[in-house]
Image (cartoon, rainbow, N blue to C red; front, top):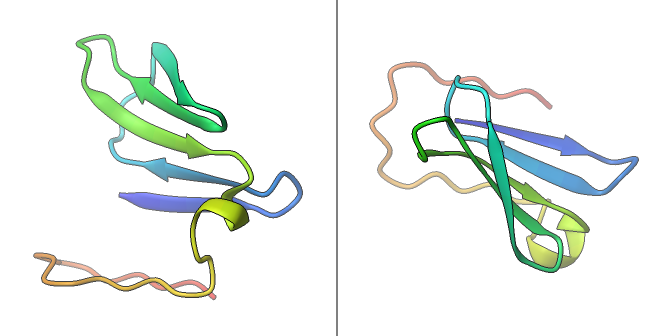
Length: 72
């Protein structure tokens, strides 16, 4: 899973899979879910992300991690 924040648009994209999306559904104002060709969720797009989530803190709890990557 990858979190990509774009400050110029204040959007956060949560990339959940390495598959391309073929369909997108708006589920509420500023929240879009992306699905692959089989209907599996592959990404979440949050517009105006700083109003929806606290972007200053990321907490990971009990994740089975093989590799840790932190970019500041």
